[in-house]
Length: 421
Length: 137
Image (cartoon, rainbow over all chains, first blue to last red; front, top):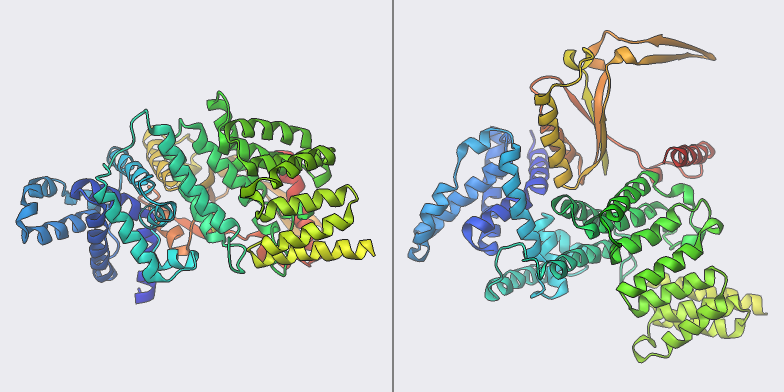
């Protein structure tokens, strides 16, 4: 095997095993920081050994054992950690490395992975740090990869991740799945992180790269991991459903020049039908767990309404408005209210929609939000108030951060101008 | 990246017998692993070729031959569809299939955006696939 090929094989193993290895080590070493450090050392040893010996039958157990051994070697030189030694030594079992993983061995490991996910998404950390730490320790991405995805330098991202690990240690965050009383909120924090990553991939918030599909795919994979770990939680299925249904439109979302294509104008033959089928299956699981869908399940239901419409004209806007009404009850935010207004207009009542948007636009916090202006412009145009629409599209373009969105809004302003002449 | 892991047939899968508990359990553990890793999109096991048939093409002629077919190693016994980040990752998953003999073939799946979108036949195929899947959904 060439060096490059064995490196690629090792990367593949790391992607599959890293969350399990780091989770198990965090438990036995008592620190996420130490777990990562010694896991990295084990990885270096694998890089040196595996090209000669081949990949062990159970590479995760091999990496875990080597990392533990390295920790013992390091800590033998340090009295403060001597008390841990019997524990650590007991954790070694070389037989594990030589046999394939079995169900008995896997279940406790999955519990540790769940603890790792809750720890990385702990609310004591700022959101950006939760995202970075989750991608690093649960996703198994390198600091470099995360830095590139988030358009920051590698040292900056490295600092963000080390600071996050330190903050967890300083706050004494226990390596645990939260108790029943705080579980719903903490699960919400986990799902929020995954959805932030997904959206970062779905539509970049800055720069000219609109689709960073890899990040969205990774978010979807991690959502499936959480879904498998917590199958009784309706929102884990709702989250997978939402991501699958949105990801089904990846191929249709930008045209050949990289310009975004609005939902109504998308070539629906380019929607990924198998992703839609998987999304709907996940949504059905969420519905069966009931009693009512949570915010992610409801958003998935909205995406489903679009996914099942053969053409844009076939969209059941009445059902969409009804789903927005339910969503507004559980998440009464201006963004939901704005999207509901769009649905009301599509259902045939642009005048009622404009009244809602005018009210939203009058709020101080939303005055400089480009989407409010863009929706308002569109509604004015529908009502034949072209002059005002043109001015509002131009204002929306001014407020938009993404270059491509800006260009799209300017084009609409110009189109209105041409029609108006 | 989507990959298919194609499980080749063997004497046991071609015997027509339903897999025993031990085999089902081993595959169950493997499938659990794929699910827990968030990579499994789907998969099925196939009945023996005795229950199948082959259609061959020669110009406008079609001939149908019923199974079973002799060349066991060329036959399929099942498949998994997985979504992973590299070919190496797909191969690593294939290595973990609980078999002590036989073969699993690893193949990358085309996605629609890899084809020339201007091609009329590609357009027709996309259309066909959409209609076909809409019917079966």
